[in-house]
Image 1 (cartoon, chains in turn yellow, red, blue, brown):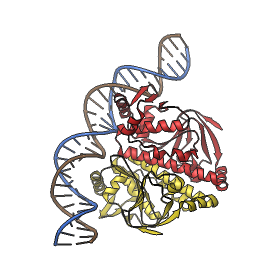
Image 2 (tube, each protein chain N blue to C red; image 1 turned 45 degrees about the vertical axis):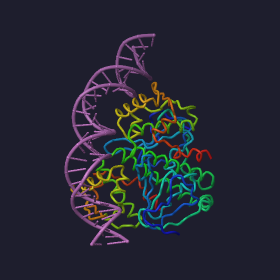
Image 3 (tube, helix red, strand yellow; image 1 turned 90 degrees about the vertical axis):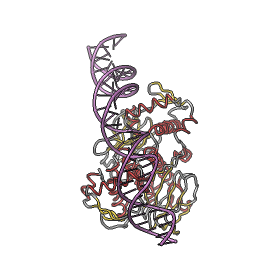
Image 4 (cartoon, protein in one colour; image 1 turned 60 degrees about the horizontal axis):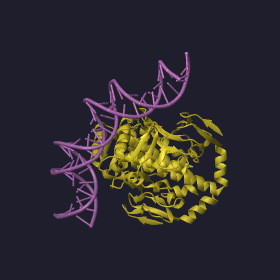
Length: 210
Length: 210
DNA sequence: CGTAACTTTGATTAGTATCAAAAATGGTGG
DNA sequence: CCACCATTTTTGATACTAATCAAAGTTACG
């Protein structure tokens, strides 16, 4: 087990780490950079997820992982993880399921960034975060504390921080959400979900429970 | 084994198919739609890949898969695939590796769409396609026949067909590529890769070979 | 209390979408 | 084998979303 402070790197692109990490508490995010330094957050990891199966089953890391909040992780050596995968069919099944769900979410993000305008895109993101945090027991209702700065949120949504701020305001003015500092309250879930073209199917929450 | 004509659907969103498909010959693509009907192609499948592990290990399909060219697929029943995964550790490992590489590629696409301008984005895509088609033995050099219409390519790159066309022309005018009908020849690989911020690490070609 | 990090607002510009239509291509039936 | 039609590609003109640049407020923290 290891505690890691918010902001610290868990994985760096180009490394060949010999262990993977299971998030026990806190949140982490995975991101990639272009040569020019533009950053794109490609996924968020909640407690219960193995952040980096990639590290144990592929050769070299092609992305970075950082702690979003203070995080508690369990380190699992590469050899142990491979052994588990080989000798315990139920675990192998769980790893595969987790990898497939992870990919599904990234695909939805790709659709989101590529084909939805910034306002619906943000709404969609807020809905997803609400459901996933709930599923992880991090919040109870449609009211939660967003663990991101606006800068980070913009990096997850493929837009600039300035524009993100305007879109947040706009969702507020339109009556979908209420904000107070970092906390967000969804005033009318159905309305926001409809407006944001949000359908939770891609989260596979049922599949993940098993 | 089954032959499928170009354009035919292999998987539809919302279905619960009881089998997965291995691409034996030809190409397939996976896409998602927004409510308004905007389409985003989220991945391309080359011979040797199982298109839909998702179908056998998750509950309901959250995306569509269509044949890009005429395709030959092997159908593998859900139960057989699960049995294989449970009883053959090397196969379980291969499935997991394939799922992780698949996810890596989608992450790079997300970065590509979110953070690279349309010209570098297209260059990046052309480089990727060249390497993957080569790896699958579909073409031998940096010259290949693009299996997409410009409309489909635009749907993969998150832009409009009109704009894609202009960017193709621009790559030609700048001397990176030569086109003749559907065929593309990369005139200077290093120059195009550098211009397009293309680093093949994310394809994990080595890992896939094993 | 002071400073750094974060959020909000404003003005301007760049990149890409949209709308429209012409030109080229490929496949098909006569 | 040719004429025709549907599909695909190319070009042009205009509109609009989001980026960029700049700076003022605000909050959190040591």
